[in-house]
Image (cartoon, rainbow, N blue to C red; front, side, top):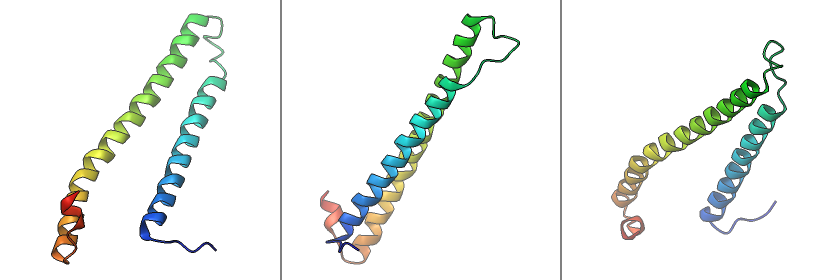
Length: 97
């Protein structure tokens, strides 16, 4: 096992894994939408099939963006509270950032 130099290295590794998994998930979802077979009832209507696929991809993109927005809105007050906790413990590095 590798010896980690600091907590920052562990955070960077966690961030890297999170980003890799998120990217893989997004690629997988878009791939599956593009490989999905059209509904047999509307199969002959190619324009409708294209519009349905476009709608699905747009919906997925919107949901992904909404999730990122919610996470960032939650992260700001969490980071501020974590900084206040560190200051109460005598660690003032986060105040200067």
